[in-house]
Image 1 (cartoon, rainbow, N blue to C red):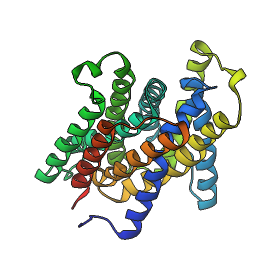
Image 2 (cartoon, rainbow, N blue to C red; image 1 turned 180 degrees about the vertical axis):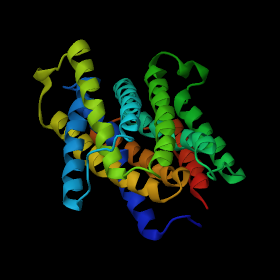
Image 3 (cartoon, rainbow, N blue to C red; image 1 turned 90 degrees about the vertical axis):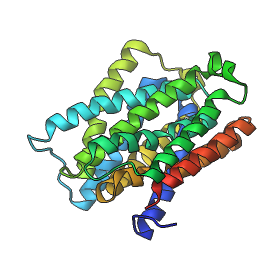
Image 4 (tube, one colour; image 1 turned 180 degrees about the horizontal axis):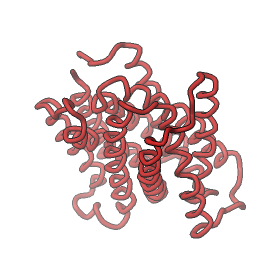
Length: 292
Protein backbone atom coordinates (compact mmCIF):
# COMPACT_ATOMS: atom_id res chain seq x y z
CA UNK A 1 0.00 0.00 0.00
CA UNK A 2 1.27 3.46 -0.81
CA UNK A 3 1.05 5.80 2.16
CA UNK A 4 1.42 9.58 2.09
CA UNK A 5 3.51 9.69 5.28
CA UNK A 6 6.81 8.14 6.45
CA UNK A 7 6.99 4.76 8.18
CA UNK A 8 7.72 6.18 11.65
CA UNK A 9 4.59 8.33 11.47
CA UNK A 10 2.57 5.30 10.35
CA UNK A 11 3.86 3.34 13.37
CA UNK A 12 3.06 6.20 15.76
CA UNK A 13 -0.44 6.51 14.33
CA UNK A 14 -1.04 2.76 14.64
CA UNK A 15 0.07 2.73 18.30
CA UNK A 16 -1.98 5.71 19.44
CA UNK A 17 -5.09 4.51 17.63
CA UNK A 18 -4.72 1.07 19.22
CA UNK A 19 -4.61 2.80 22.60
CA UNK A 20 -7.54 4.95 21.51
CA UNK A 21 -9.54 1.79 20.84
CA UNK A 22 -9.54 1.10 24.56
CA UNK A 23 -11.20 4.44 25.33
CA UNK A 24 -14.85 3.20 25.17
CA UNK A 25 -14.00 0.44 27.66
CA UNK A 26 -12.25 2.94 29.95
CA UNK A 27 -15.18 5.37 29.74
CA UNK A 28 -17.70 2.67 30.63
CA UNK A 29 -15.58 1.65 33.63
CA UNK A 30 -15.32 5.26 34.79
CA UNK A 31 -19.05 5.87 34.36
CA UNK A 32 -19.75 3.30 37.09
CA UNK A 33 -18.81 6.07 39.56
CA UNK A 34 -18.41 9.33 37.64
CA UNK A 35 -21.29 10.41 35.32
CA UNK A 36 -20.48 11.95 31.89
CA UNK A 37 -19.68 15.54 32.94
CA UNK A 38 -17.64 14.47 35.95
CA UNK A 39 -15.82 11.90 33.80
CA UNK A 40 -14.92 14.63 31.31
CA UNK A 41 -13.72 16.95 34.07
CA UNK A 42 -11.48 14.38 35.76
CA UNK A 43 -10.20 13.07 32.44
CA UNK A 44 -9.03 16.46 31.24
CA UNK A 45 -7.60 17.56 34.58
CA UNK A 46 -5.24 14.60 34.18
CA UNK A 47 -4.81 15.17 30.44
CA UNK A 48 -4.01 18.87 30.82
CA UNK A 49 -1.48 18.09 33.56
CA UNK A 50 0.26 15.54 31.30
CA UNK A 51 0.37 17.93 28.33
CA UNK A 52 1.65 20.79 30.52
CA UNK A 53 4.46 18.59 31.87
CA UNK A 54 5.42 17.56 28.34
CA UNK A 55 5.41 21.22 27.20
CA UNK A 56 7.65 22.21 30.10
CA UNK A 57 10.04 19.35 29.30
CA UNK A 58 10.11 20.35 25.62
CA UNK A 59 10.51 24.06 26.37
CA UNK A 60 7.24 25.05 24.64
CA UNK A 61 5.68 28.38 25.63
CA UNK A 62 2.15 27.78 26.88
CA UNK A 63 0.65 31.26 27.20
CA UNK A 64 -1.46 32.03 24.12
CA UNK A 65 -0.99 35.21 22.15
CA UNK A 66 -3.85 37.71 22.01
CA UNK A 67 -4.81 36.53 18.54
CA UNK A 68 -5.01 32.87 19.66
CA UNK A 69 -7.52 33.33 22.50
CA UNK A 70 -10.69 33.37 20.37
CA UNK A 71 -9.60 30.15 18.64
CA UNK A 72 -9.02 28.33 21.92
CA UNK A 73 -12.28 29.54 23.43
CA UNK A 74 -14.64 28.44 20.67
CA UNK A 75 -12.72 25.23 19.97
CA UNK A 76 -12.85 24.46 23.69
CA UNK A 77 -16.63 24.81 23.68
CA UNK A 78 -16.95 22.54 20.61
CA UNK A 79 -14.58 20.06 22.27
CA UNK A 80 -16.69 20.02 25.46
CA UNK A 81 -19.95 19.40 23.59
CA UNK A 82 -18.44 16.58 21.52
CA UNK A 83 -16.87 14.78 24.51
CA UNK A 84 -19.99 15.15 26.65
CA UNK A 85 -22.18 13.66 23.90
CA UNK A 86 -19.66 10.86 23.45
CA UNK A 87 -19.69 10.00 27.18
CA UNK A 88 -23.49 9.88 27.25
CA UNK A 89 -23.49 7.67 24.16
CA UNK A 90 -20.84 5.30 25.50
CA UNK A 91 -22.89 4.85 28.64
CA UNK A 92 -26.00 3.94 26.64
CA UNK A 93 -24.53 1.25 24.37
CA UNK A 94 -21.82 -1.41 24.39
CA UNK A 95 -18.11 -0.62 24.30
CA UNK A 96 -17.78 -2.70 21.10
CA UNK A 97 -20.50 -0.74 19.28
CA UNK A 98 -19.04 2.50 20.63
CA UNK A 99 -15.56 1.64 19.34
CA UNK A 100 -16.82 0.99 15.82
CA UNK A 101 -19.15 3.97 15.63
CA UNK A 102 -16.79 6.58 17.11
CA UNK A 103 -14.14 5.32 14.66
CA UNK A 104 -16.28 6.65 11.81
CA UNK A 105 -15.14 10.17 12.68
CA UNK A 106 -12.56 10.15 9.83
CA UNK A 107 -15.38 9.69 7.33
CA UNK A 108 -16.96 12.90 8.51
CA UNK A 109 -13.50 14.44 8.81
CA UNK A 110 -12.73 13.68 5.16
CA UNK A 111 -15.99 15.28 4.03
CA UNK A 112 -15.47 18.38 6.17
CA UNK A 113 -11.79 18.66 5.16
CA UNK A 114 -12.87 18.66 1.50
CA UNK A 115 -14.43 22.07 2.12
CA UNK A 116 -12.19 23.41 4.91
CA UNK A 117 -8.63 22.40 3.94
CA UNK A 118 -7.21 23.74 0.65
CA UNK A 119 -5.94 20.86 -1.50
CA UNK A 120 -7.40 18.15 0.76
CA UNK A 121 -9.98 16.93 -1.74
CA UNK A 122 -12.20 13.84 -1.78
CA UNK A 123 -10.81 11.71 -4.62
CA UNK A 124 -12.65 8.71 -6.15
CA UNK A 125 -10.84 6.13 -3.96
CA UNK A 126 -11.65 8.10 -0.83
CA UNK A 127 -15.26 8.51 -1.90
CA UNK A 128 -15.50 4.72 -2.33
CA UNK A 129 -13.92 4.24 1.09
CA UNK A 130 -16.47 6.58 2.65
CA UNK A 131 -19.36 4.62 1.07
CA UNK A 132 -17.98 1.24 2.20
CA UNK A 133 -17.35 2.44 5.74
CA UNK A 134 -20.81 3.98 6.01
CA UNK A 135 -22.21 0.62 4.91
CA UNK A 136 -20.39 -0.95 7.84
CA UNK A 137 -21.79 1.75 10.14
CA UNK A 138 -25.33 0.92 8.99
CA UNK A 139 -24.70 -2.76 9.71
CA UNK A 140 -23.61 -1.97 13.26
CA UNK A 141 -26.60 0.32 13.81
CA UNK A 142 -29.00 -2.37 12.63
CA UNK A 143 -27.45 -4.85 15.10
CA UNK A 144 -28.17 -7.65 12.63
CA UNK A 145 -31.88 -7.51 13.46
CA UNK A 146 -33.37 -5.54 10.57
CA UNK A 147 -34.78 -2.00 10.64
CA UNK A 148 -36.43 -2.57 14.04
CA UNK A 149 -32.94 -2.67 15.52
CA UNK A 150 -32.62 1.07 14.87
CA UNK A 151 -35.11 1.85 17.65
CA UNK A 152 -35.07 1.50 21.42
CA UNK A 153 -31.72 -0.07 22.41
CA UNK A 154 -30.04 1.68 19.46
CA UNK A 155 -30.46 5.17 20.96
CA UNK A 156 -26.95 5.13 22.43
CA UNK A 157 -25.54 4.12 19.04
CA UNK A 158 -27.08 7.19 17.42
CA UNK A 159 -25.67 9.43 20.15
CA UNK A 160 -22.18 8.00 19.58
CA UNK A 161 -22.55 8.51 15.82
CA UNK A 162 -23.51 12.16 16.42
CA UNK A 163 -20.37 12.55 18.53
CA UNK A 164 -18.30 10.96 15.73
CA UNK A 165 -19.68 13.54 13.29
CA UNK A 166 -18.75 16.39 15.64
CA UNK A 167 -15.31 14.83 16.19
CA UNK A 168 -14.69 14.64 12.44
CA UNK A 169 -15.68 18.30 12.12
CA UNK A 170 -13.42 19.25 15.04
CA UNK A 171 -10.43 17.36 13.64
CA UNK A 172 -10.89 18.88 10.19
CA UNK A 173 -10.97 22.35 11.75
CA UNK A 174 -7.95 21.45 13.87
CA UNK A 175 -6.02 20.46 10.75
CA UNK A 176 -6.62 23.93 9.40
CA UNK A 177 -5.90 25.78 12.65
CA UNK A 178 -2.75 23.81 13.47
CA UNK A 179 -1.05 25.32 10.43
CA UNK A 180 -0.75 28.57 12.40
CA UNK A 181 -0.78 27.64 16.12
CA UNK A 182 1.42 25.34 18.18
CA UNK A 183 -0.07 21.85 18.47
CA UNK A 184 0.85 21.33 22.14
CA UNK A 185 -0.50 24.73 23.20
CA UNK A 186 -3.64 24.09 21.14
CA UNK A 187 -4.20 20.73 22.86
CA UNK A 188 -3.62 22.12 26.35
CA UNK A 189 -5.87 25.17 26.10
CA UNK A 190 -8.67 23.24 24.43
CA UNK A 191 -8.68 21.02 27.52
CA UNK A 192 -8.37 23.94 29.97
CA UNK A 193 -11.33 25.78 28.43
CA UNK A 194 -13.43 22.62 28.77
CA UNK A 195 -12.76 22.18 32.51
CA UNK A 196 -15.13 24.83 33.94
CA UNK A 197 -17.83 23.71 31.50
CA UNK A 198 -17.55 20.06 32.54
CA UNK A 199 -17.39 21.06 36.22
CA UNK A 200 -20.53 23.20 35.92
CA UNK A 201 -22.38 20.35 34.21
CA UNK A 202 -21.32 17.90 36.91
CA UNK A 203 -22.25 20.17 39.83
CA UNK A 204 -25.60 21.20 38.37
CA UNK A 205 -26.87 17.97 36.85
CA UNK A 206 -25.04 14.93 38.23
CA UNK A 207 -24.28 12.98 41.39
CA UNK A 208 -21.12 10.93 41.85
CA UNK A 209 -21.87 7.30 42.81
CA UNK A 210 -19.21 6.94 45.49
CA UNK A 211 -20.64 3.59 46.62
CA UNK A 212 -19.29 2.05 43.38
CA UNK A 213 -15.75 3.40 43.85
CA UNK A 214 -13.06 0.78 43.25
CA UNK A 215 -10.03 -0.09 41.18
CA UNK A 216 -11.79 -0.42 37.80
CA UNK A 217 -13.49 3.03 37.71
CA UNK A 218 -10.30 4.74 38.87
CA UNK A 219 -8.25 2.85 36.29
CA UNK A 220 -10.77 3.87 33.64
CA UNK A 221 -10.44 7.57 34.49
CA UNK A 222 -6.63 7.39 34.65
CA UNK A 223 -6.49 5.63 31.26
CA UNK A 224 -8.74 8.28 29.71
CA UNK A 225 -6.72 11.12 31.21
CA UNK A 226 -3.12 9.97 30.93
CA UNK A 227 -3.11 7.58 27.95
CA UNK A 228 -5.85 9.02 25.73
CA UNK A 229 -6.09 12.72 26.64
CA UNK A 230 -2.43 13.12 27.55
CA UNK A 231 -0.49 10.91 25.14
CA UNK A 232 -2.80 10.16 22.23
CA UNK A 233 -4.20 13.69 21.82
CA UNK A 234 -0.74 15.25 21.81
CA UNK A 235 0.74 12.78 19.32
CA UNK A 236 -2.36 12.90 17.11
CA UNK A 237 -2.32 16.70 16.82
CA UNK A 238 1.44 16.60 16.19
CA UNK A 239 0.84 14.24 13.26
CA UNK A 240 -2.20 16.14 11.94
CA UNK A 241 -0.18 19.35 11.87
CA UNK A 242 2.57 17.77 9.78
CA UNK A 243 0.60 15.54 7.43
CA UNK A 244 -2.65 15.66 5.48
CA UNK A 245 -5.46 15.68 8.09
CA UNK A 246 -7.85 13.40 6.21
CA UNK A 247 -5.08 10.81 5.76
CA UNK A 248 -3.75 11.07 9.31
CA UNK A 249 -7.09 10.71 11.08
CA UNK A 250 -7.95 7.75 8.87
CA UNK A 251 -5.73 5.51 10.98
CA UNK A 252 -8.76 5.08 13.18
CA UNK A 253 -9.28 1.81 11.26
CA UNK A 254 -7.19 0.23 14.05
CA UNK A 255 -9.33 1.58 16.90
CA UNK A 256 -12.59 -0.32 16.24
CA UNK A 257 -10.83 -3.69 16.19
CA UNK A 258 -9.03 -2.91 19.44
CA UNK A 259 -12.25 -1.65 21.04
CA UNK A 260 -14.31 -4.67 19.99
CA UNK A 261 -11.86 -7.20 21.40
CA UNK A 262 -11.17 -5.22 24.58
CA UNK A 263 -14.93 -4.96 25.18
CA UNK A 264 -15.17 -8.71 24.83
CA UNK A 265 -12.11 -9.44 26.99
CA UNK A 266 -12.64 -6.91 29.81
CA UNK A 267 -16.41 -6.34 29.92
CA UNK A 268 -17.53 -9.75 28.67
CA UNK A 269 -19.61 -8.25 25.87
CA UNK A 270 -21.21 -10.50 23.26
CA UNK A 271 -19.77 -10.03 19.78
CA UNK A 272 -22.28 -10.59 16.95
CA UNK A 273 -21.66 -11.41 13.29
CA UNK A 274 -23.23 -8.08 12.34
CA UNK A 275 -20.80 -6.21 14.57
CA UNK A 276 -17.77 -8.04 13.15
CA UNK A 277 -19.01 -7.48 9.58
CA UNK A 278 -19.60 -3.80 10.28
CA UNK A 279 -16.17 -3.43 11.85
CA UNK A 280 -14.49 -5.02 8.83
CA UNK A 281 -16.36 -2.76 6.41
CA UNK A 282 -15.48 0.34 8.42
CA UNK A 283 -11.84 -0.73 8.51
CA UNK A 284 -11.78 -1.46 4.76
CA UNK A 285 -13.31 1.92 4.00
CA UNK A 286 -10.81 3.74 6.20
CA UNK A 287 -7.91 1.91 4.54
CA UNK A 288 -9.11 3.16 1.15
CA UNK A 289 -9.35 6.69 2.52
CA UNK A 290 -5.80 6.47 3.90
CA UNK A 291 -4.21 5.42 0.62
CA UNK A 292 -2.10 7.95 -1.26
